[in-house]
Image (cartoon, rainbow, N blue to C red; front, side):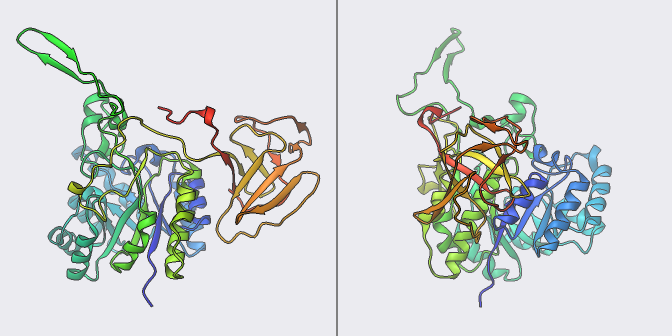
Length: 430
């Protein structure tokens, strides 16, 4: 039997790590300190939290890959060495590194640690893959600009080298993150983890005449827009059959350590369904896209894995930076599974769709708190009353209300309650 592909999800916090696993991930990636991209995410993991996350994963037969994929300066090398040793003591399942020097250093300081080469290294061909494999990389996280045909060629030449590809998440305007726009405009260095996402901004264009000092503002063609560097988000769920049919991909990866807990859950669930359905020969693209379209996004593209870059003209969102998904998160169920925390205005009688981990059996009930029921293969809930944990009945709850609200049936921890996104919330928030 063909070895099943691994589903690798982002873990920006301990909570997101647990959610990713609960919703279907086989492995997660995350890190601690300034040596981990993204730095905003890395700050949210302490060494203690990361150790707890590794323990949580291993108890469930899952894996954690530690990111040490920043680009260090000379002044940081002594700190980097200490960090590598400290991270190795936590016993993650691999290190993710981005440069030849750090790869060599990790091999020396943690010789038993599997080493995965970051997408930041921009591996696009057999020659580069071979060099890094000879240097000790057991897995290559290939450049997002690579094609499936090139993956096949690499695997043919290097059958023992694991290949990992991105299938979902933000796409960089530059070549796999090799960008200095953020550094120039705000002093935040992208390849050290602090990108300010300047490519997502709206820009005005001007033409200058240096001889006369005249400056003209260029008027944009109506409908074209001025988000001139804003790449759409990657979404390859509908192409998972093609990817897995190739039989050369060992791990499919979701981007997004700094994104929401709902994003971690939804992407894990959607791609878990796609992978399971592929092996069970019942692939249904609409089912996965229903989940993924519920997320905020910059517009979706299938990018370059199945089509060459020069064949594409639909990879940019020129007239908006971000758009709402089809659904809004109304609440998230607590770890006890008995109450939810409000994330959006909720009233008695609102129909809340229950977004739970795969395989969850939700009891259909009708009691004094509310009802649960099934429609079109999905589970819903209506609350007859908003009963807070302190037994106070509320007329409504809003985002920011810290009172846990009772639910009529016990649900798995971190189950999400969602409603269709309303029109008045705006379609293109910037």
